[in-house]
Image (cartoon, rainbow over all chains, first blue to last red; front, side, top):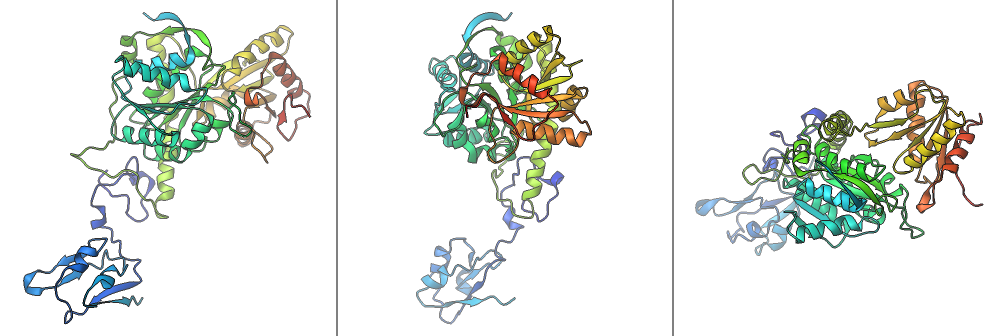
Length: 100
Length: 388
């Protein structure tokens, strides 16, 4: 029961009974890998208002604190939806194409 | 000591659920199953059964509630028929993989269209591939006994799968039969309190009902299938333990006068009793005929079935569900497939009868015997008694 079922290519015998998972399994499983665009912040324009932080539906923005004065997107989990860029009152966030 | 009572079979099933101390019953009424859950709602309302009775708005919700309550660690029961089972279908597929040991009594009834409330096996056969254990009762006593056994089997730590206990609609569900009603103490000896294997516990949180992508969907299904095949051993053990407590022995494959039979009829459910009477009459006339009944339908008891039919020259397999656009019924298909791979080479004829409540008589079995021994095996399932 300790092994999260989200592990790639799990063997039949390794799956927990009932196909369950412990909470927090996405800490190990990065869910942002299918993003096609990423938010890129222009810190010159950023006024540290927190709109990106509050509007992000996946909670990937982290408050960098009063000294740094900006919010940073965790790209391991950002899906690239662009809500932050749309809501930013200063147009400080640009959705930029992911290059493979 | 057990008490002999005259009781409608549906009520006896409900009384068995009471004796099993079910914790949660979530059900929606549908003919011919209604009396089971109606009586249970009375038992709960009267304080005779300390359980939560959830009167849901549909069978889809009934099965959803059952999965939830079973996942919460409660001993869970529901009952349905026909369209009700069809409406449960989406959730029926989910319960086995989540390993929720729900007990479901099905009063078997035909599926629409045309609208028909009477008995055949089209409801259960349409969910045969879903991972549920499936057992069939032939009379009222068996219905009560197998309801008790169902809890024991489903909740066994080695099984932890849902189970359907099938009784023929009306033919069993609405008949009053003499039934030995066991004492609570006897039931407690056979059926221990439910100890869930996994459940929603705030001290040890888990997620149930996950996404399983291409990298693990096959493995999750295989794990469930493995558990289902493995459950047969527990069914046999539970039947043996049942016999030790109650003195009635059940088998995954039941037989009747099959030892020296050249022709064996393969049946399921209550028509087996008519078949036995017909076989007695044919035996009196010197015919070497016997009966093999599938008590356990899922997992299919392959070894036991093959052992029971190994000496027969002819098999006459009865189906009570029409598989449209296919040459055999579901039981016929499986028997043909199993027997072919075993290397045995009896002639296998497949007969479809008793659809939508049409009577199955002793004469039908005599006709089947005649056809099965005629030396001409038909490629296609024959619909006995169809007017055309």
